[in-house]
Length: 392
Image (tube, rainbow, N blue to C red; front, top):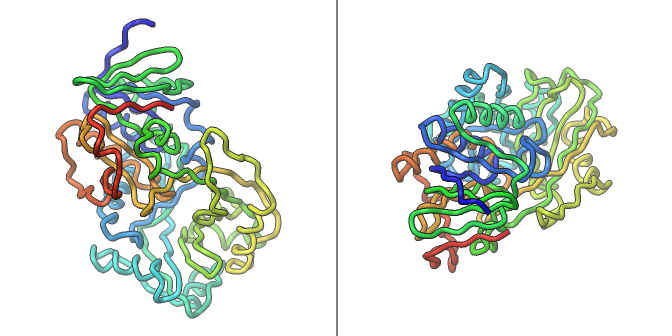
């Protein structure tokens, strides 16, 4: 095999976070190599499906809000740079019983960060947005800055602009192994060897295979979304239907207005709680998948019809506390881990790409990343290994 080609930074995985990292790094003048085992964008990971929610009020933790605000700014900047629409504003709904974490946490985020918002009962929500039929005992937090992103377009735009700034992007290149030694990291695919001063691991559900020491904390999960036909399509257009995140007795669900004038897209967080090997996923849509979503949709959005327009399988990669892992590995600052995001990370990708560029450029970020430390779990082996080796 020929000598390893040299780069400043190698990014493994060119989905939501890897594409953003490649763009921000290349824009700052770093010699960047991006690798992905699939053509990009693709439908075998976590970054496909036509639409992705962006919400600013954040029930998971108020610490996400500054990151979400910056992410929205950067998505809008990316729209301008790419010359195409990537963000559709609709407002966002976070709803649940009044004492539930979804409503309380989102409301707290608004209070802590001074976000514009309204609190509506289920009945008030239905009057304003007639497709919604939540119980009147529920409370809904409406936040006007929310909406949805077009994920395939976002990834393609980041990659196109990364290439325009000199990044070398190679698809159909699966990483076989990588070794960190001295001041360099060597990455090997079936065909090539590459070397760089920094390695960014943004491989989604494959991160655990590239980083076995952290694999116990990175759990891939099969996820399904379905597009149902609607009886009254006008009620589901972006002007009358905010994106939503709701907790009901059946679980926690999320959904979108119609992007095609016909269908309504819905998913359930953790769906059927099915663990998955990313190299051996069940990509078939089963009746049990659809039934789980149809029952919810028709109960709380009764103008949703029985018929299915489409369904899609994707992957979550969950951490034990469902917060992200972002930043250098403990004891190994040359290796930056991204994108085990527990199903709620796409919206932040633009800002996380900028954070990677800051970490490589300055060794730190303006954002508080303590919630996302890669060594935060008790007994995490990542902190104990001075020389890291990752093998698929």
